[in-house]
Image (cartoon, rainbow, N blue to C red; front, side):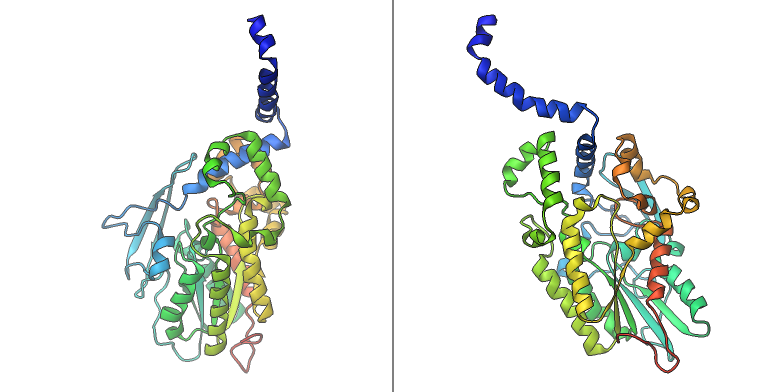
Length: 384
C-alpha cells in the first residue's frame, strides 16, 4: 500500500487538492456556504411553472399558461367561482388554496359593462400573475385595495377598477390583450406590469456549456463561481441571454413600445409599475435587465413608473409592522437551511417565491394611488 502511494502520490495529491475546496465549502460555516445553500434551494424553482392545477369540472385551468398565451389569448369561463389547489413540485411543497370569482367578461373581479358609463373613470390593470393576484382572495388583490383607496381619495367620482391580469402572461400577451379586449372598453388609465414571464425567471447567467452544466451544477465550487460571476456581471451583459425563453429582450422592447404607441393613438394614460422578488438582487440580474428596459421606455415617453420596492422596505423597517407579519410557508425551508438572512427584509410580504400577499398588495395599491391625480376640468392631470 505504501509503495502504491509513493508511485501515485502526484495524482493522489492533485485529486486531494481538487477535492479540498469542495469539502471546505460544504462543511465550514461561512457566507460562501450560505450562498451556495441558497443557490441549491433556488435550483428547485426551475420547474415552478411546469405544473398548474389539474383540470376538472370545478377547477378549470390550463397547463403552462406562459406557453399558451404566446399563440392566443385565453380567458377564464365567465361568471365562475374557482377553487385553486396548486401542489407545487418544490422541496417545501404544500397546497396553496384560494378562491376567486370571474365576471361576465371572464376576468377576475366585479362585473362591468362593456359600454363605458358616462362620467366614469375607467382604470384597467394588465399583466401577469402579480397583477392577477395569485394566492390571495378577491378582497386582497391590488385592484380591490385601489378601488377602496380611490373611493375615499376622490369622493363623488365614479371610478371603475378592472383586473385583466392573467397568470403566465408575457409582454406579447399584454399587447395583444390590450388590442383585443381593453381598447374596446375605452380605458382612461391602463396600469401595466410585465417582464418576469418574458424570461420565465431565468436566474442564472452562465449557459456557455449547457451539456456540461448539468454535470457541474451540483458541485459547490461551480455554484460559487457562478454566483460570483453573476454578482460582478454588468446589467447590460444580460441582453443576449442564450437559454430558451418565451420573449427575447429585443422582442420585449418592441412589445412595450407598441403598448406605448397604442396609448398615444387611443389617448389613455399609461402607468408602469415594477416590483422586486424576495431574493438577493444578484440572483435577479436578468429580471432587472428586462425591468430596466421597461422603466427606460416609460421614462423616455413621460410615463409614470411606480417602483414599489422602496415602499416594501419602508414598511418592514417599522418593528410594529414586522411583528404583525408571520413567516410565510414557502420561507420555512430557507429558515431551516439557515439562509433566511440572505433574503431581502421584505420577504414576509410575499405569499410565495414571487407573488405578494394581501399586505404586499395593499402597499402596491397605496403607491399606485399616489400616481393617480384628477383635476376638476379634465379627467387627468399628467401624461395622457
